[in-house]
Image (cartoon, rainbow, N blue to C red; front, side, top):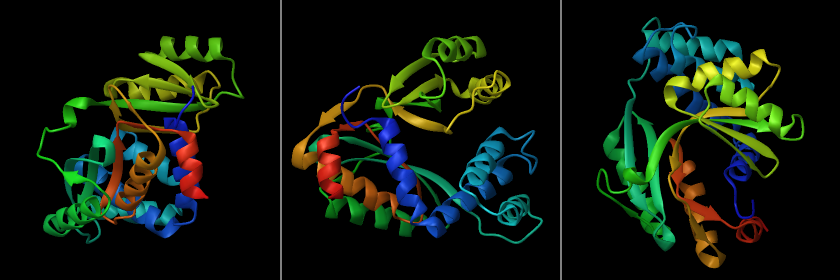
Length: 249
């Protein structure tokens, strides 16, 4: 598939966060803390916490950091109370943006987001203005060089996945949220390992963005993700690889 793929974006984000490990750990710790607070401190019985812990382990976070974050969430250790908020807005070329945050100061966060948007050709929207363009789904990324497409597709569908696409050297297995962890476990039981798994706001339809607009969107996404309170940013933009290369040159 040509264009700026979701898997390309994830690989690029991983390379970026490897250079910003401290900031990445801060975001992961917040997610672990909130996940433990919203359910239980046992990853085996708390699906959200299990995903957060697995993600932290994949990022090589020390076990003691993970344990401390869990204890802050369950109240065994004193911790900050984070509020979960989603913001919606628009970027250059009218692309839709959905921004998930965890914050201890909502006024500060919305001010920071509005500032970054205004400085980068975007604007903050009202609740519901773009959410209808996205769907919350599970996505599992598998290295396509390690497994056959037919074998992986059969295993994914048998496990309860709703779709699988081949994109930029990866198989992207899509599930509904309820089946997400079950599909992961089923794939692992059949010897299929995955590179990354996440619950994401997936755009129902993407918009091709090229040239200068694509570079502006990429700059905006990076600026939003650099904000401490922002956990994830989703857009419906399909950025072409030429623009990506130009922005990184």
